[in-house]
Image 1 (cartoon, rainbow, N blue to C red):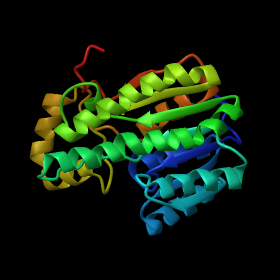
Image 2 (cartoon, rainbow, N blue to C red):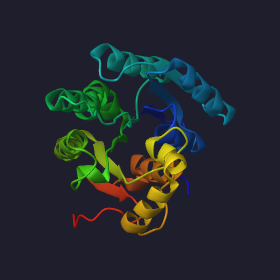
Image 3 (cartoon, rainbow, N blue to C red):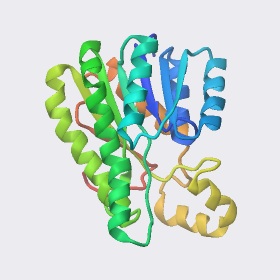
Length: 253
């Protein structure tokens, strides 16, 4: 199926490994032109080289998305290299498990909510000019139900609520906003990947009790949904949050 993404300018944050890298690879396979970013320049450059090996045009930007300067640099480089922005994927995110709870909430909010919002606002005029502008925010099943630690749970919930609210506003400008909520995804260097190696018996028990599909998810399974949501094929999906979790989540909504 041709998703209509060939030649489109796509930004993927947190793209140097794991889910973000798989998302970038999936867009590259569709012929998109990519701006990727992450904080670590060395890993980012390796990802850029791999994507270019797939035939993609790639702009790599080492930047911290939680800072105004980092966010602005990402948008400026994408527009300078590719003339505009058609798709923004806010994948950068995570949890802060600091002992001091207020500090953990503040840092988690900055990473999971404020950084995504800032990039969306900076990209907004370019997405509106695109004619097929799309934003996909990578949330979590623990933004839809309890779990994952208090700061992560609260801020991923806020990210989904923000995405839904802005989706209803921005569709009037021709910009679709949606979210993807992964369950437990394992990859080398990720937390679940490490635990599979370090705690195999405990992980087998976790899978048996929590994941009806009987295994951890893989990054490319999330990426396939993201690319579809960003494409014109998903033109009537606005403000949705799509679980990608092998049946792990328990929420009725």
